[in-house]
Image (tube, rainbow, N blue to C red):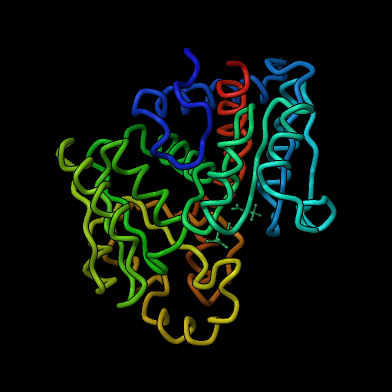
Length: 312
Ligand code: CP
Ligand code: NVA
């Protein structure tokens, strides 16, 4: 039940395989304790500052509630209201906030911003989503997969849709670390970042797992144990909405596509979702969908992370 070797969680790659598995186990314990009403004030008197430069429902509420349940406190800091939004440097903001709080969570655009934050902060920094990474969501996704499937070994995860967004990249790193097979299916021009994809493939192959890409969603989804999709237009890309609607149309997760998956496949989506765009209502509201367990698990997985990263 050790602490983490990393000071910050900026991407899934900051974790070792053992740390990731331990986090999931810890999350399962905390979930059980919460359901049984057993208090777990591991962060008594500690404060988490949460800076949001983009909207959020799940991340904000799960971190805030999670800190309270751990005996601590969380501060919601919208960049619109703090001096950061008026041009105070990231470095000064990180140094100042580190004098008050015991941990920082940031949701922002460029990944460089959070890296700069982490360089200047003297407390742990957690990535609450950047354009290329969403590690805390993938902690919850992996926990959900583990709860439903009982293992990662031999599973095939198929991600369909925008291959170049935060969810795909963090899932690729998560699959590589847990040894799951993963296929990404996206249209030309929306492939994952080549560096992240290559690194994940190499890591996975050392574990005997396979990471692949196909522009053909039917081929990609064949025998999948888990189907994952995400919005076609991520936050900050709104100008491209129309061209994306056209490009991604053949990549909708619907019952015809899901026919090619295993009969007990699990459907995941980090939410918010657009019904009848990236996924039909039939699928997301259907018997294979675990999207609300997945959303709930944000709370438990992040509490495990907070406990381990802030207690150092
Ligand atoms: N999945 C997720 O991060 O949701 P929010 O944008 O609502 O935080
Ligand atoms: N890819 C989405 C995830 C939202 C939680 C986005 O960045 O908007």
